[in-house]
View 1 (spheres, one colour):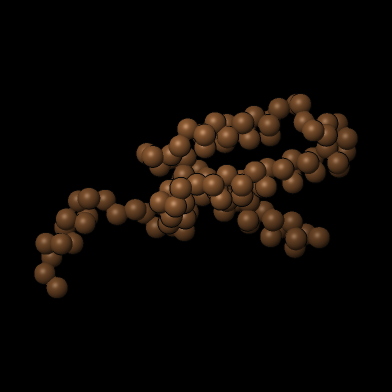
View 2: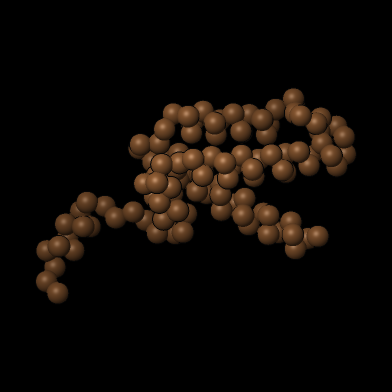
Length: 108
């Protein structure tokens, strides 16, 4: 069971990083920002589909709904924003214009 939870945690953490970088993209659509805000509000709101007062089941809906919402949002991103977010989440920094100009001037 702990192994499954750790796998889920790794997937959610990676998706959250991708969503964070997609939100930071200059051409990020407004629906993405509104949906991400709604997802965070749902997560911290005391009003849930299943109340959090129920010991296990109340938290389980958050554990299921939030990762599904993350995947759903990431699947609907425009291709160039998705590629940018995956590149940044993988640890790579997008090349700057000055770096590109400098590498063009360096003889090989």
